[in-house]
Each structure stands twice: as structure tokens, then as C-alpha cells.
Image (cartoon, rainbow, N blue to C red; front, side, top):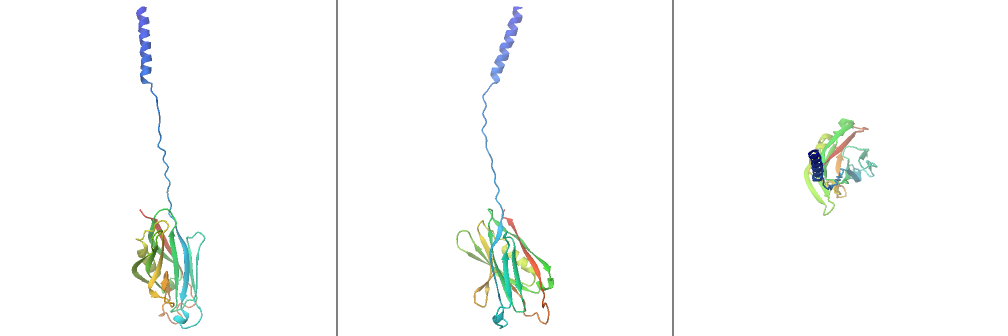
Length: 223
């Protein structure tokens, strides 16, 4: 009986010792991760427009061609409207694009879509030959490109793509187009891209006609 009690006591002590051997203090430290993403946002921020005809080409006093440009409230669409166009007349659209996002952006491509009167849209002439870049800090730079002299909307879109696709626009930077080797009647450089109706159009061809087309500037982030 004594041996049995001694054995039970020994087992109890052994169990107690085992519990004591596996007890320990614990502590946890934590790495709190927060990752915020930036955003891609490119906008039209300003525009101007004009024309040259009358007195300079046709020697007719007064402003016959009407031109108007307007930026939508969300700054994502720029509407350019030319009225009373005729052979020998010209118009131009100057627009400024700014990277208002937080990541660098660049043109992936420009696409042209004619929505009305393909023949007239492709009978006009479109020109520009220089990209102006205004950085957030530092001087404005002028980047000469192969002169774009497009005879249809598709070539205009391709010319815009080739001229702009390698230009990285940092946050806050702006770009615009000019035509520096063609002077307007006031001897100033022609801004933006030009639309001209060739004087070779004769007779009643394209009289009292309207054409509409869109140019989509598709931007992507810079990887």
C-alpha cells in the first residue's frame, strides 16, 4: 500500500513538473501595412481657336469663316466647330493638355473616327510640326517632329500618335501643338493643328456640306 501511494505521489509531481516546463510568456508585435494607389487623370485645360481667310487669301474684307471651341465641364472633351468653310480658307485649334493625376502618363495612340461625310473629312488638309512641352519646373521645351501634312483623318491620327507617343507627361506637366514653320497673316506662328480646305476643290464640290469626326487621345500610365 505504501508503494502504491509513493507511486501516485511520484506521478503527480511528474505531471506538475511537466506543466511548469511548458509555460511561457508571449508577446506579439505587428507590421501595419497601408498601400494607397495613385490615379491617372489627363485633362484639357485651355483652348483657343481662329481662322485665316478673307483679305489674306480671298481678298474679301470681313470674317467669313466662323470658328468656335469649347471644353466640357469634366475637361474630357474639346469640341471644335468650323463654319462657312470654303476652298482656300483655313482654321486652327490650339489646345493644352495637362496631367492632373499623380502618375506619369503618355499617349498610347490616337484614333480618328468619322461620324458624318467621310468624303469631305478626307478632302481637307491637316498640319502641325512641333510639340511644346511645359514642365512643372523649368523652361518650356520645343520638340520638333517630322512635319505632319495629312490628307485624311486617318493620317492625322497616325501623325498625332507618332508625335506624342514617346513623350512622358509628369504630374503637373502640359503639352500642346504648334506649327512653327507656317506663319499666319499676322506673321505669328500658327498654334495647334490646322485644318485647311484645299483651293484645288472647285465647282460645286462639297458646297453646303457638313462633316464630323472625333479624335480620341488614348492615354496610359508610364510603366
